[in-house]
Image (spheres, rainbow, N blue to C red):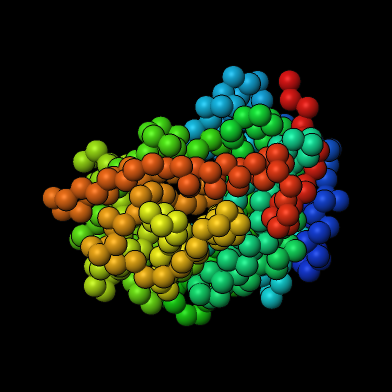
Length: 422
């Protein structure tokens, strides 16, 4: 990888476009370029010192440095042929990722990068001040032989809200959707085959890649990365219908009432690291947070929304400015209404209402819906009963994802044909 330090321009063998302000949709016409200008497959694109001359200098005093990645063994489809039903939730090196860069007031047209590394200025705003937001969504191999992504426009809108909160340039919806789709196309052979309870997890990340020293001025460069990986359930062990045990956090807060809790900022998850590992050491599967002001109202589980089903058939989920709006929760609410449940999004007083829920679930993109079989607060343990209602809603939801039921709400975005996996 060759980098112009002063010119702020990265030049790599896999650079697909240098035009500064072209519509993102043109990414589909890009070709991967390898050493000596040859077309190369993502897994064989490699640049070693001396293969080509460095780029021309922009200024007389400019210095150019070359960086090599560590050795990378890419995942092969054959590695997964007997694991599609037991993938877990873990990182596996894929064919590559997509990256867009924003500078001088506009986004470039995108690049497909084979190596799972990114070159950053040592004073980047993301590294020093946590200026980053990310998303999570999934792609599925559907019954009709097509690969589809669920609700990318919802995720685009949520990332735009996060960008505004953290003072970053917004990612246009069309660019977000096409960037996500392109990354899936370039790795399509790793979308788990239809018939397996697995999917391709997609992680778009927007961050300040440019340098910052203090909170002003803001960075002059931002990046949008899109990475993918084949995945099973987030709580594949001890989760699902078997259920997990949750511990209420009395001495930790996930987010302040007027902080960044309502956006998917990376720092929000850092706040849960100490508490969730403490809970796991105590034998619990997850944490549950109450509001930071009064320690009275239910907010969120570690990485998921709270959903409770009452004995009289109400689907209840918390509402507060510090809670992240789960796209999965929003869609499940639609299906719950169609199933005849009353949906309530409101404050939930833990002490007064926790025993009114016959079912409790953790809801999120990675988890979908996971049963919570007990919640411990102090010396008191609250246990739930059946999981029939939430399991039924989840079954319909996943049937839509895999194309077993019609997509009447327009949630699924068509990408391409499934890969012919060996």
